[in-house]
Image (tube, rainbow, N blue to C red; front, top):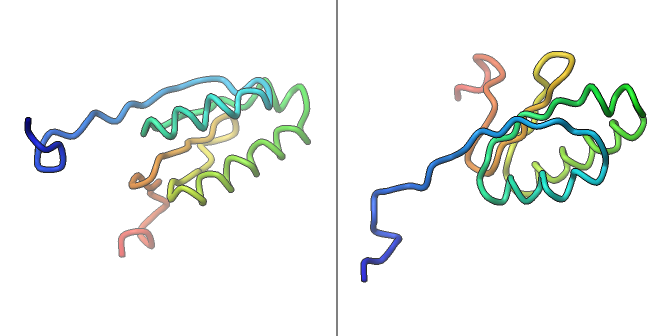
Amino acid sequence: MADKSTTTHKPPVYLKALTLRDVSDLSSIKEDIKKHMILILRVTPLAQKDVEELRKVVEELYAYAQSIGGDIARLGEERIVLTPPGVKVWRGAYDLK
């Protein structure tokens, strides 16, 4: 049997778009990140329902992304992107060091 660490094939990285409706969505979001997915989260429904809850959810996702070596950034007014370890969000020329 071939040792997986010596193979050159990497599993694909998936991009998944979903809507963040409730704090209960956090566990499935974290599971997707553990599966090395890039997530685009639409936050408008939660923002319309409860801005304070949205703030808490985003703070928790930020802390989680930092703790695993991932990244998180805002995409306009309605979306945020969350990335797994090894994937960074480009924020301009200062990132290219």
